[in-house]
Figure 1 (cartoon, one colour):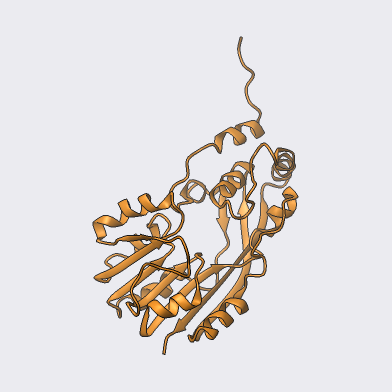
Figure 2 (cartoon, one colour):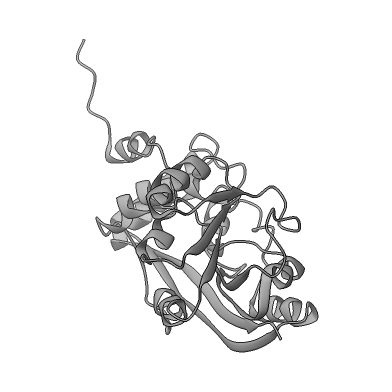
Length: 254
């Protein structure tokens, strides 16, 4: 018996059952299915401007090592950390040719790294313990981080009827105060709210599967009804927008 062709909605539900490794959203961004509106700053440029002046570098939360590899050539003493277990072998394979070890992290407050080792510590969208950042920085060293604000993608939780993100209060002022209490001096800060635009429901599903902390109990089956409503909205309007919340900080160790 010939099976009926799947509906467009069913196609997207099935199509999202794909493996996700590292920290690479190119499956969505290269096709334009998901777009983040530009920020006032560029994290890569901020890192690159400081890189030539240092001989030791730590990339906290390297994901699959994609961003760190893009900075090559790297300082002789470069290390990466990663706390998401599936990413560790991906990052290790990518960074091994560059001579960069990947240190697993189980507790942000107990990094397996020496005191006062790094001149520059970078952190893109990774959690951190301020006191540990101070401990591993050399005197005069710099911590540079871009963070995702706690109100990022809040509309997705609302649309699906899911609980609010558990770190909804995470924002620039909170991060800056924590770093200052730990003994660092803030040298630059900025914050911006733009948009992330999705052009099909499959992109939203794939995105949520890749960031399980946004809705920890997310599954297509559990939220299928609400996903169907979002699909109808996108078909009618062509896209749907969520809040893209970002902030950037640099801090110096005396």
